[in-house]
Length: 366
Image (tube, rainbow, N blue to C red; front, top):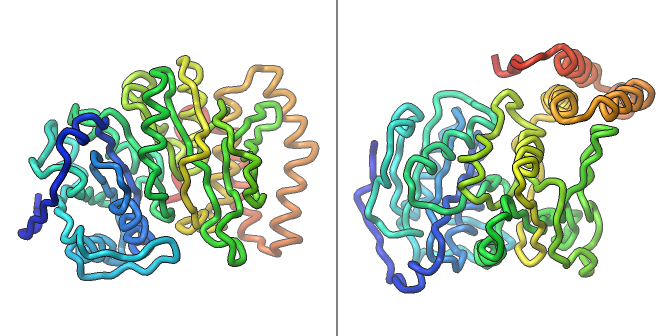
């Protein structure tokens, strides 16, 4: 365990801090330090006074941890169209753990008051989105300090009032399990007001997820707080007790559909899933994903998801839809539109793996 020598402690309104529930913000990094430090800078400029930031590095091989340290020390200014970089909150205190060390930590490791602390967890390999986040979630559950966990993609920028909006809504009803914000594209042909996600609907009959508002310019048409079928993994606030009751992300998914699986399990446990339009983020969308590998995981995990959660009637209809239409459509997209035989092979491999798997799923990461 290491901690930087320079400590910066700002004045904190202790009364205000005590009144705000403590939030753990979990950010997963894999070879994406440039995105991560932009995300971190937007997080540290939020007005919410009571949060901890946990960056989980998923076995990066491009000096990501070193660059994140340098950012925390104030050595790397961040450029972004969404905010102006400031030095007043630097250096940020950081504490480093290996994955093996963090699994043994049972207490809050520092008396430095939030939000002045950054916890860095260094994984020895890429555990995927699911288990990478689980490593941090287990630490949070063991620390017995935070009430909420914010899962946040590293390729996002958050609005300064994000946590305030999400926490106020969560505090209004103890049966709210997960809350997702309004998500915009970071850059949609030069625009920042195009919606990527404003809540989601599911169809187990077809095995499809439908992001509400996808691709539309925001004109206030999705400004109502609403119950949804799922929230997106790029950003959602979770009541910590939900993980205690239903478990973590299922690591067999590795990446894609793991948050949808988690949402279904939360709904089955009686929790509400809420879309909160006043909370906003901007998302670069799959900047850390490789397109061809995505074909494998998305196909495999979609099938696995339906097998787990559909009724017999729903699964039968899914099979008719998949083999009667979707298999040909996805194959044509790879072979004709993308002209990519390797992508097609990975898609077929994903389909086979999804239908053949029972409980375990082999990982494309070896």
